[in-house]
Image 1 (cartoon, each protein chain N blue to C red):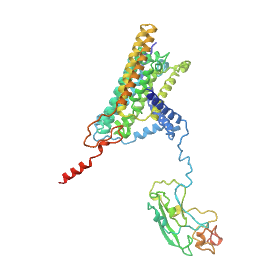
Image 2: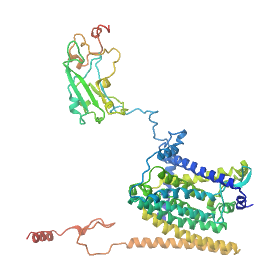
Image 3: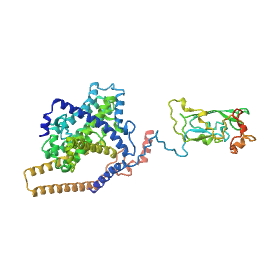
Length: 422
Length: 183
């Protein structure tokens, strides 16, 4: 029986229970994620991190939450009140909704019902996730706009531009998954990976997805929306108390959501690691939840590792990378992949497939060498032409050591002064 | 292409640095529970020292107060009398205050002190919740009485002058220095 059919038999109360469980899972994940991130980053900097509240400091995030709730809730006088209040709510609600279609386990028995730990399964689940993520951007834009001050506006614009541009790359990387699995339903994509994970056979897509998921969640090294040195706190500068807590929650739930999506689409979802498939029957199928969480946690570790290692990108570098590298690369990769897929479906002879692949590789090598040569030539030819010198002092151009034109003609100055003094 | 590959591999090396650092010994000291000793000559709280028989070394000259760049020291000297003697010689410090809200722990007062009365300890826990508590009085600063010391006021060592004290010739107290009730 397919997962969709299995989920169709769920009674209403079971759906409610699942919804609650998913909500609790997300909130607990956030609490653990905040603590885990601080501990791991601290270790990477040879510190200990929070270890005071509760055992190993596990309750640190909870204590922070309580502290935030007890803080004064400020609404700036220049803010658009209604939108200012709605914005964090949009952010915090949409981030949870992506989890509705994430399959946590395979078939399990919950309260005597045979079901799967997945709230629902749509034929277009992944598109649904992309759509929800786009709605989440509204929270950021509106927060930035409604704050009625400059830094939040700039930060909001930056993050929305960032999320939208990287969503294009992300969507394109997912196309490869759709082509290969022949479905947009998350459970069917997981099922399609029973032999090979898509992170192996669609490795370029996987790399692009991982990069764009970091950009999509506004995380380091792509956290320019919250670049403290430039923008104070970005879109949430004016937010305090529980409203700020909602943005904070949304950020971490989003991280878990994109990690869960990466797990589902590229890492075989809840299936065990290769060679350990015998564990999938343990605890009546519940043990697969462990594999799912383990994979999500390793993605989360990647997020933290990136944050601990890489410096923040400049905004123009970031946009250039997204639009000029990630998107064209994924487009070309999809073209190649689609061709190969059609070839294999039409049962084209192996020689032609091999020839096509070799041709593509040769073409890539050719293009890169040509690119290298032209850039080298351009570098060599980059000798500044003789320009008429301006009458005012200008800063030295890159590579120009002495600023010759700044030497002022002394005699001219003297005569000019004399003329001026009469 | 080779340059790009090289720079990329160097960036991957950066990932290894952070990963390996996770397993290194952390620098954090669990402060209130674990206290690491300071450097030997750390500038901490001041101390007003005594001679071996218990008399105070401070002569109330105020040189420390004059040397202080932060104006943190206040001294009022007074005359010793034969009945009530706190230090050898003519004068003693009657009032001695150090304001730790002003002190910058530079140690110029220690350099200025002519009798080595004022020195610094390694004690650094000088936080409090009230301004007045951080103005240390003479009682807070005086060194504790060690074995063989007698609490002043009491007379100088028999058959000695202040010069014997300054030369460091007094190595302990004499029974005749103690008050009647202490005998």
